Length: 440
Image (cartoon, rainbow, N blue to C red; front, top):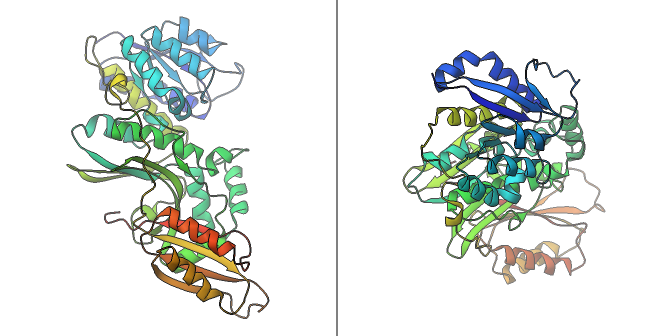
């Protein structure tokens, strides 16, 4: 049997502790499967005395993660600290420049510095593996980087943030407000004390930018994503969507168009009877559309210690199975210098149409006036209806729900501006895209 693969782990939080436990519990099984033992020889974390429920005796302890990456006798550096900047960036860069392989779960780091780090890895003969950075335990990186080689991919999309999916699911099933569901998500540990990164869509955007690079062979462009979070989704939107036969999900979508690559993250209405509509709670789902395979939909745990550790373990196992002199798979499926410049597409006509909710003063002619502004902007309406509670106070604002046929983002926004100028709107309009997938 080959010499043991020596790994150093920076970060012993939930994922890091789970990884240590799994590697220790399944030491013999992993050795048999990989053809060599996998040994944890060094770790780094903030508090040495903290009880993490794992055995760390005999493992070298580094107070400084950068020192571990730069100096430790290791074959693989596992980065589980998070964050786009230091110390994660300096650690990963230092390890790769030594020719030490890197496994990371850090989507923010990759979104900000992925191409630079991929170039360094190639220059020094090291691997940069990051399956756990997108969709937790779902093996979507391997699928795009290796399994689907030769396919021309037209679209990648999915539910990539468990926090948002949990909140939207709970709002629908229990009829609770966004604020109530967010508090419950925080209590259960699904949401951070400061949840903005998740609920405003940034986490999904980072993951989408990585998938876009893999799918379309372009440089990462995390700053070129149309972005909307879920903070303005109300229980009224959830209920209206249900009445129309839809559920609301936060989707990340990247697709190839005639004018470039379109990337967008936003709440989306999907039909009740589709598979992706049934993905509830903290579960993630990623779909890939291609010319040879057709459509591939992968569903699984998107977060959590064991799910993420499983993906990290898979990356480590791949390195353990590789042999000296073997050709490494580039981090983004092709050499970093061969990645094409990212060209942002014009926002095209949205094939699924739009859901528009307006609160208006109860005034004669409002209904007809709304329809007139839609027609003036070449927006064809599938339906327009008044949504109100029985025995509602006549003085209270009324809700108008519109569902459009395929139209452009610009037309919808222009119509909304025109309607605002009429003076009968109460509050801000709600606009949500509708997806009517063929194969979901």
